Length: 301
Ligand code: G4P
Image (cartoon, rainbow, N blue to C red; front, side, top):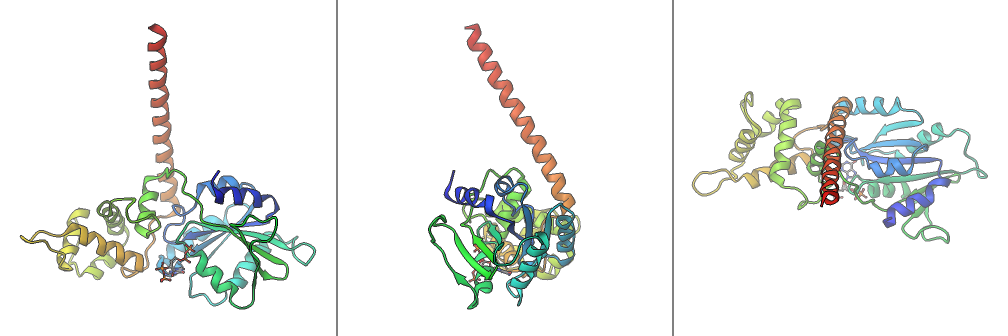
C-alpha cells in the first residue's frame, strides 16, 4: 500500500466526514476511485473547487447530482471565496448533527488529487486563526491536523497515487485540466479531444475566443489548424505548427481564457462509465479465454 493510501486507511475509522475536493470542470474525472473504496459508508462532502473556471449551469447539475446521494453534501467553491471555512464547517455539521462540542469534536478528512487546489483552500482557511499541529504522536507523519474551530478537526492527507484510469474520456479531461503531467499524454491528442467537446458544447465561445467565423461541419483537426493560423503558429512552408496550436488551446482552457467551461455532465459520465465497464469486461473475458486456451494446449502436450 502506498503511503497516502495507508495514511487514509488508518485514519478513516475515527473520521466523521470525508471531504473530497473535485475540480468543478471535471468532477467525476477528478474523483479518485481508490478514495471511494477506502471511505465507503462514511458521510461525504464534495467540494467542487475552481468553480470560477467552470460552467455555472453545469456546476448546478453536479451539485444536485451529489446532493441527491445518501449521506452526501456538495458545495461549489473557488479561491476567491471569502468565507470558505464557515461554508465547510456548516456543511459538515449538517452531515453529522450529533457530533460537536469539546467532548465530541467533529473529525474531518480532506482529500483531493494533486492540483485541485487543496493547499490553496487550506492556506485560506488557516490564515492566522487556526493552529497547525502536524507530526503529533500517533498520527502518520504525512498527515496534518488543523483546528478549524475548537470542536472541528481537519486532517489533511498527502496526494494519492492514481489508480488505473478506467474511463478514457476522464483521462483526457484530467490531462486537459493539467492534473496529469505534461509528458503523460500527447498534447495534440488531448487538445483534439478537448476541442471535440468544446465544439459540441461551447461552439460560440470557441469562435469568439479565436475569431473564427464558423466551425459548423468542421472536424476537430480543422479547427485546431484554424486556431494555429489565427495565432500565427506556423512552420516554414506555410504549414500550421500543430504542437504550438495545441499548446495555445490547452493553455487558454486551463486559464479560463476560453470562458467558463465544464467538460462533463452527470448523464454523460454515466454513459462513459457504462461503456468503459463493458469494454473492461470484454477485455477480461478475452484474457480469460486466452488463458484457458493456453492451459488447454499445455494439457494436450
Ligand atoms: P493542490 O494543493 O491541490 O495540489 O493545489 P494548489 O492549491 O497548489 O493549486 C493548484 C493550482 O490551482 C494553483 O495554480 C492555484 O493557484 C490554482 N487554484 C487553486 N484554487 C483555485 C481556484 O479556486 N480557482 C482557480 N482558477 N485556480 C485555483 P498554479 O498555477 O499552480 O500556481 P499559482 O497560480 O498559485 O502560481
